[in-house]
Image 1 (cartoon, rainbow, N blue to C red):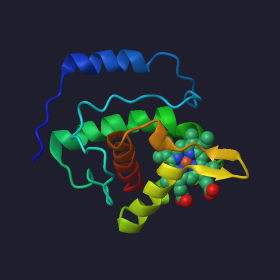
Image 2 (cartoon, rainbow, N blue to C red):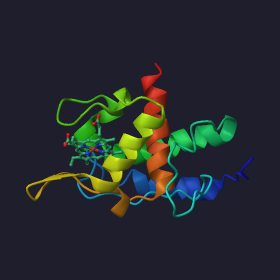
Image 3 (cartoon, rainbow, N blue to C red):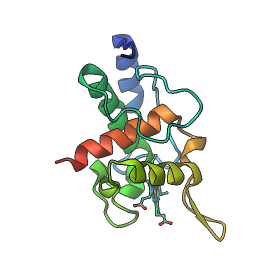
Length: 145
Ligand code: HEC
């Protein structure tokens, strides 16, 4: 069990920051995400989603941070609520298994750059591992429905 403390004052501060300056499709520059309430994972990348098996309050918090991080950093291309409008692939379809994780890691680390054109930025330059796995966990939760 990883120790988990939810600092209410941090949450309130975060919510008030988040509601500032966000358009319907999310801001254009990648947004820093506060991951201090999530179990820490360190610098070295896990090869499978380390949050997939978390339960209870920890899972609830992972999903809360993941949804917010997705909407701020991925939704403008991959679609609000994870539902792709066709600009970029629908990330709910990525299987919640080792192969899906491998492909997820590859894309968030490398982005999609062809002939110098950036179709997707290298997300690991802007978001830490905790934020990116919380997004993945949230995407898995919306694809279950
Ligand atoms: C500027 C637009 C843009 C943003 C922002 C963006 N993506 Fe992407 N993403 C793309 C495009 C376009 C592709 C398809 C790339 C290709 O096929 O070469 C893609 C592909 C992917 C894939 C591979 C999906 C598949 O089925 O092959 C993953 C995983 C992914 N993105 C994750 C993310 C995550 C997570 C975020 C937010 C942290 C994000 N992307 C933000 C444009 C974007």
